[in-house]
Image (cartoon, rainbow, N blue to C red; front, side):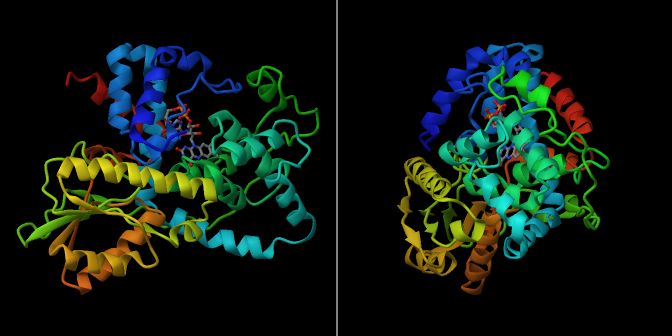
Length: 403
Ligand SMILES: Cc1cc2nc3c(=O)[nH]c(=O)nc-3n(C[C@H](O)[C@H](O)[C@H](O)COP(=O)(O)OP(=O)(O)OC[C@H]3O[C@@H](n4cnc5c(N)ncnc54)[C@H](O)[C@@H]3O)c2cc1C
């Protein structure tokens, strides 16, 4: 899997033929997974834009033929919008992981280690653990079964399962991963858990995996948590509109980060940037808990985005690795005489922490940071408050309107 926009486009183009069969075939977990798009690592880094993916399938297929696929693409937007409004779900998870890693003892610790090493002794589950670590990808249905077995059969903390995924998934996403694990564990939708069934696994793996009767838990149990603080009233937050802060103060630079690597398309594409900074902050992988493959892939994706951004804006691109990106951005701004830095605001997660540190350091040096959002996000995120289906109904209505 090449972490480049062109490779993502090629993957999407390959999938176009199969897109019309997606609804009927998507739940089957087959070697090679060519019944699903396998575009998530590119979409997660916005090497491919959700709008392009949806427009691409709509250009080739009727809406009813690809409704299911389009619906899945919007799940990502829904989760992201939901987490932006309930960041406590992310903060709690990040705090729980180190605590649980330190305190898990005895048999439970052994079970945790065996689960991550593909030695739990459960057909399918072990193969998926190895597939995840070996390839950085898992089919959606396998993710659901895996998470369910982790939580309800092995009775391991969901937070550690989410950390295992986040360490290895090339599409690892603060919102989709954390909230999907919460959903399986019954924390996301009140009274609803996901319990993997042996017959369902056997059917959808076409007999490749058949857990024995009695091997899987057949019932869920309730997991308690303090209610999350009420969603923030973010519609009143100025950040949700394109910020013009600092316009006219002098030369403007662009901070490029791996949550939006197609800056030459859309909202920022018409801006003038004197310089682009696409430096990799060295400590982020350890802070986020990414494994080597994820780190390497993301770093190379950033390089790919930087080359395209430099060519599009005819701007000098600064790349490399930094021990202290915030401090280095201050120096970079001075060198390039940049008085304002524009960036897409990272979503809740490790890149936002990085972005906020950068904002503080630049502000102290008198450089304005102007956060921007894509219209896709500003228009859709506000509606990701209740369940997915009201959200989807709204989207569907908007898709039915002529452009
Ligand atoms: C426990 C668990 C953890 C997950 N963690 C992640 C994660 O970290 N990052 C991530 O991108 N997805 C995650 N997903 C969602 C989903 O499994 C993947 O997006 C999907 O498997 C990616 O493969 P694909 O590109 O072939 O998807 P397709 O089925 O072909 O769908 C096309 C695109 O739609 C989006 N999409 C599809 N299903 C979902 C979904 N359920 N939720 C959100 N977006 C979706 C993705 O961008 C995907 O690339 C998780 C699901 C579960 C159950």
